[in-house]
Each structure stands twice: as structure tokens, then as C-alpha cells.
Length: 116
Image 1 (cartoon, one colour):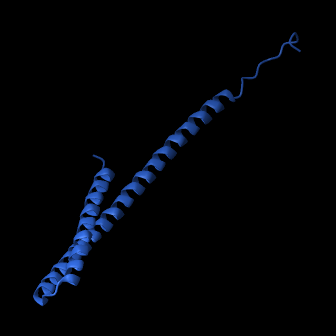
Image 2 (cartoon, one colour; image 1 turned 120 degrees about the horizontal axis):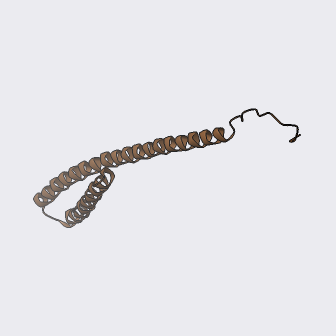
């Protein structure tokens, strides 16, 4: 599997995890609002803090992988351009060589009086 595909897959997996954590956080925040017991509110608050921390870590990993993917794509793109430029240079050189062969000076020939 190419490196960019692997990075895309990892990013997609992290995005799914981030979405899941966000849904859980939303539910816990709603539960905290509805909760009347102070000890349960405190427990939910700690759980929310832990989940936010986990979500932030996932977000940082995603950002890192997205930057890495961008680097891979840019290097592939610039490498492709370099290869294309080299190939184009070689094609031009070959056509110039072929053209110069056709335009090579012809040997001087003596023109006979019959041709004049």
C-alpha cells in the first residue's frame, strides 16, 4: 500500500475516533447539566476533562499525519515534475539531434555544365 494511502487511512480512523469522542462528550455534558447529585457531577466533570484531553491528543495526531501526508504528496508531485522535466529534456534533445542531422551541411559537389 502506498504511503499516502496508508496515511489517509490512519487519518480517517482518527477522524472517526475524534467524532466518537465528541459525541460522548456531548452526551456527558448533557448528563452533567441534568445531574443533581454533586458527587456525580464531579465524577462526570472529571470524565469530561479526561475525554477532552484524549480528543485533543487525537486531534494533534491527525494534524501531524495531515502535515506528513501533505509532505508526501508534495514530494511525489515535485519528484514527478522532475521526472517529467527530465523526460521532456531528453525528448527535446533527441528531436534537436534529429533535426541537426537533417540540417547537416551537404558536401560540396561540383556542378557540371550540364546542370547549369
